[in-house]
Amino acid sequence: VRLPSRVSPAAERRRAWLFDLAVALAVAAVAILLAAGIGVVGFLALLVAIALVLWYGVEALVRMLSRRRRAGQERRRAAAPAELRPARDARGAPPGPTTRSGSGESRRRRL
Amino acid sequence: VRAKGALIFGSSAAGKLASMATAPRERRYPRIPFWRRLRRIVALATAACLLAAALSYVPTMAEKHNVGFGVTSVEWLRQNGGNPIASEIENWYYELNAPGKGGPALTSLPKVGVAAAEGGEEAERKRVYRPPRVKPILHPALPDEGIWKPAGAHAGRRPPVLETSFRSDPEYPQFVAGVAWIDHNRTRLEYTPGTAEPPEPLAHRGAGEVPPDLRKRLVATFNGGFPLETSNAGLIYRGQVIAAMVNGIATIVAYRDGRVNVVRWHQGEGAPRNVWFAKQNLPPIIYEGKLNPNLTDGPEWGETVNNATRVWRSGLGIDAHGNLIYAAANYQTVESLALILKRAGAVRALELDINEDWTSFIGYRHPGGGEPSNLLPEMFRSPERYLVPDERDFFAVYLRGGQRW
Image (tube, rainbow over all chains, first blue to last red; front, side, top):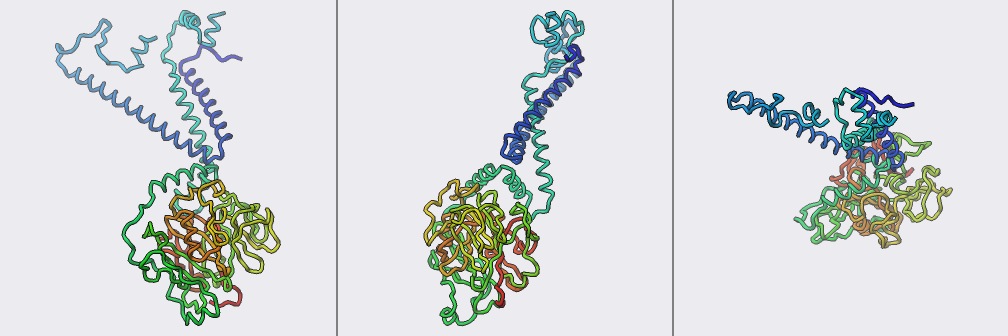
C-alpha cells in the first residue's frame, strides 16, 4: 500500500502533521516509560513548555514588528507625491522590501 | 520508472525535474523547514507529557489539603519520582536565603509554656524527677532562658509536659530553640496516621486527627517524621509491619506495656511481639550520649536537603531517665539540632521532620484539647493542626490511665 504521491498542498501539510504527531507520541511514551515517575516527566515537560512558549512568543513578536514596519513604509510611500515615488520595475512591482519574506512573490521566484 | 519513483519518494534531483516536467501546477507552499518540524514534534511531545502528568496532578490537587498550593505541588513531585529534583531546588533556595552570622542581640525570648511550675520545687525534686535547667550558652542569660515551664495550665506539681527555650548558637545569637520535656511516668505516646501518610493501606487509619474521645487526656502533639518514601525506613503500627524495618536506623519504639524508647534498630524487618508501634527515621543523631560522628551528608540521611543546610528542623530524644525530649528551631543544621537535644539532656535522639510546613509541637493548656499553643510562636502551622484531619502522621501524648490533669 502506497500513499498517494500527488496530493494537494493542504493534504501534504496534514500528512506531515500526522507524522509529527505520531513521532511526538512515541517520544512522550518513551519518556514516561523511562522516567523515575510521572512527576519528573511533568516537571521537565513544564520547563520545556515554558521555553517553547517563549520561543513562539518571541517569533510572533518579531513577525508582528516587521509587519508593522512594512505597513508603515507602505503608508509613507502612498502618502508621498507621485513624482517622488520610486519607479516601478518592469512587472509593475515597487522596489524594495514590499513583499513578505518567504511568501507570495518571493516564494514563486525561489521555486 | 525513475520519474514515478521520484514522485513517490520525492527525493532525487532527477525525480524533481521529472515531476516538474509532468506536473504543470507548481507547488504553492514550500516545505516546512526541518527545525520547525522538530520544534513542532517537541511541542506535541511536551503537550502529551503534560497531559499525562495532569491526569495524576489534577486529582491530587483537587483533594483537600492542609498546606498551600506550592507545598502540595512539591509533595506531589516528591511522591512521583521527583524527590531528587525537589531536594536540589530546596537546597538552592535555602543556600540563597542562608542567614548571616551575628546581628543584634535579643533582649527577650518568646513566651513558652504557662506560669512557672507550682509548689515547692526543691522538696518536690527529691521525690520526683524534674529535668535540670538547660544551661544558657550565651551570657548574660535572658529572663527565663532554659527554665522549664508547664505546657498546660493548672498542671499541678508534676506537669506531664514542660517547655523552655534558649539561644542555641553563639554565632547566630538570634536563633531560639524550643524544647519540650515529656514525663514518661505520667504519659503515654501514641502514633497517629495521617490521612495520606503512611500511604500504605491501614486497618486502623482513623481520621488523621486526635480522636475526640481521647482529647480529654491529650497533653501534647508533635510531627511524626519523614514520609516513608523519603526516609527509606520502616514502620510498625499496632503490632503490624506497615513498612519493613531497617536495621541500624533510629527508631521511636512504644512497647505494649506503655514504655517508650529511642533506639538504634537491630531486630530485623519484622515486628517483635512486645512492640506496639515503631517509627524509623534516618540514622541516630545522638547515640549513648555522643553525637553521631557522621552528621555530614550521605545517602543514609534520606532524599532530602543537605544536612548542613540551615532550615527548620525538629528532633526527638530520650534522657537518661527515659523521658522524651522534643526540640525544634529554625535555621538549624543536623549537627546544631543534635547539639540542642544534647544540651537539653538527650542521650539518644533522631531527627524528625524538617521545613516550616511540617514542624509542629503543640501543647494543650486545658483538657479536651483546649487552648492549643505552638512550642515556638514562629512555628508556621496552626496550633489546631492535629485537632482537624491532617495529611501527615504525628505523635500524640496522653495522660496515662489513673493520672489526673
